Image 1: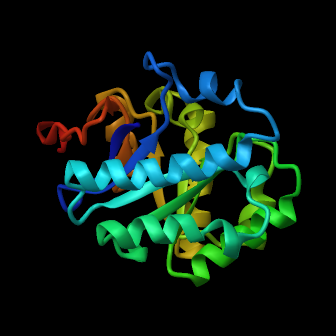
Image 2: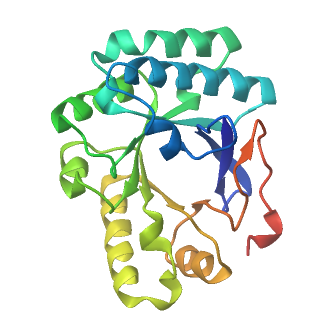
Image 3: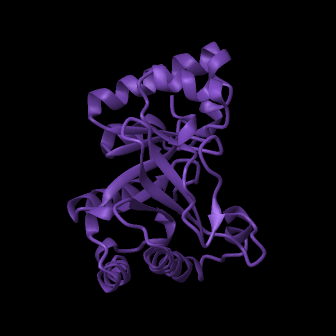
Length: 230
């Protein structure tokens, strides 16, 4: 597992660490997922959750949340699928409210209604729910219309070069207004430059993730570069 911080620049603290699966030689998550089959997907998803929790606890997660990407196509029945996760969290003394589950919008979801039922169940159990890559994929606004997640993570393609791209500014401005109306927090992910950070911060974003603050690190909880918070 590699971890990357999501920073709260208003409080100068780490809001969460996202757990990112890596291959045996550090290959990205896509490389790993390409090697999964429908038959191994469920076990892979369960193994990643437990490993993410165990490793984060061993590294000293502290008061930050742990953000875990889940694969909706691998979850058959939410109540039974969550048992291993709850057992792993209980074993290391990690409270339920410290876990955040991200549903990625860029993955083609076989059964959108099933994915929504999973998110709703997780939220009822006390987990933080998030939609990753918001604005990128197949579910679109309908995902947010039918289910109001606690966190929306803006897709990095909307963030890239936003300080000098009027169309991206307009789309992100609309997304921020939607989030405000729904009471959702917004994370700007993939932030790499001072210009991107400055525009988004002026627009009211307070949660950030990206190389501008810290790169993911294998088997470590990297500390953000707080000198970049203006």
